[in-house]
Amino acid sequence: AQTVTQSQPEMSVQEAETVTLSCTYDTSESDYYLFWYKQPPSRQMILVIRQEAYKQQNATENRFSVNFQKAAKSFSLKISDSQLGDAAMYFCAYRRTNNAGNMLTFGGGTRLMVKP
Amino acid sequence: EPEVTQTPSHQVTQMGQEVILRCVPISNHLYFYWYRQILGQKVEFLVSFYNNEISEKSEIFDDQFSVERPDGSNFTLKIRSTKLEDSAMYFCASSQAESGGIQETQYFGPGTRLLVL
Image (cartoon, rainbow over all chains, first blue to last red):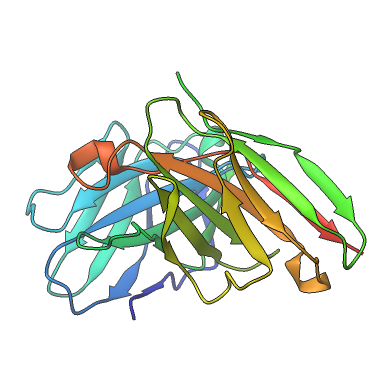
């Protein structure tokens, strides 16, 4: 079974600085998708960024980018120019491409605090 | 921008009672999901649904749970006889396609917080 691990329960960053959230996963599959979701205090899960495993190029979305290391099974999220609105729980998630049910497997989350 | 909506936002029920959680997926989406998050724990997959039948379900999704798409817009999760351990945030999600780039991305609703007393 696939597992997703986020080793940092909490992280803190100064406003306007850069922070990196870690995620590792375990799978025997060669093709899959990886996601980062943000969960603000409102509790709604918001997609931040996605990465297809077959793509070598790291995904970017404005201030958000990933460092995808397939061999190491690592998928970290970098937030540049951190803003107060970035404060939230961040969840890393995995999905197989040949998964008939499209099930997402989530990590335990990292709480990001942004200091003004 | 289209959103997944869920009602109610909060529900309190007595142990043993039946609850129905409602979701309205994004209108052109074909795949629907339920996840739950017990306070302080991981988000866990419950079930996925396509073409009026369950595609996949987890071990959590036992006989106490059922899902239904009663009309063209709603997607419901029923818990027949609630237990204390069913207390959690329940998230509905939908995606446009099973696979194929951005179309398979799952979009989540705001959740229903269920408290079983």
